[in-house]
Amino acid sequence: MMTVTVEERHLIEEIISKNTICYVGMIDTDGMPYVIPMNFGYTNDVIYLHSAQEGGSIRALEKNPSVCITFCTESALTYQNEEVACSYRMKGSSVICRGKVVFEEDFNEKIKALDIIMKHYSSRTFTYSEPAVHNVRVWKVEIEDISSKIFGVPHPNSRNYKDQAEF
Image (cartoon, rainbow, N blue to C red; front, side, top):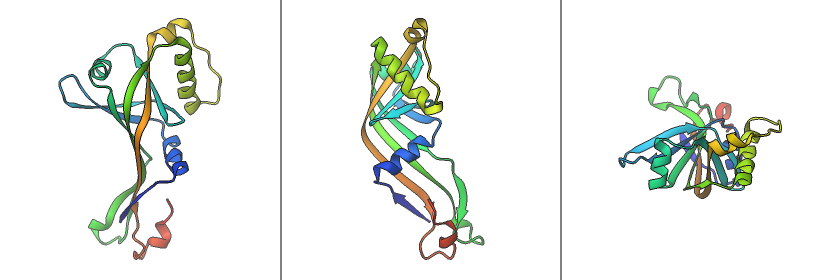
């Protein structure tokens, strides 16, 4: 099986759009890795996230705002040879982004960010109460580095290549 690097921006954005959650990795206040699943919105190389105003992740990000955000499509078991255990692998695609969290404090910018997040999940238009906007912490992550791969791609010499070559 092969892993293929994806460089085409429209394919990377397609992988991101297929996801309903992302995984945000950071370093906690004890210096340990910490990863949480989150809802998100994405537009123009910016990922928007939201959370409570306080908590462990907020304390960690105030100390070190660097994050790694991972998206991974639903995977499926595939193989090159049904009889050979080592030829089995999961097939799917992933995007890994790195950047720094900036907490959005401006009321109107928070609403724009919340709209971007909600647009990812619904075509409805939403309104937000003033207390709700004040009580949410909006994270803005400008993507500094991005990579993407499709994994579990059958090797062209595999006898099952024609059956499983679609990405």
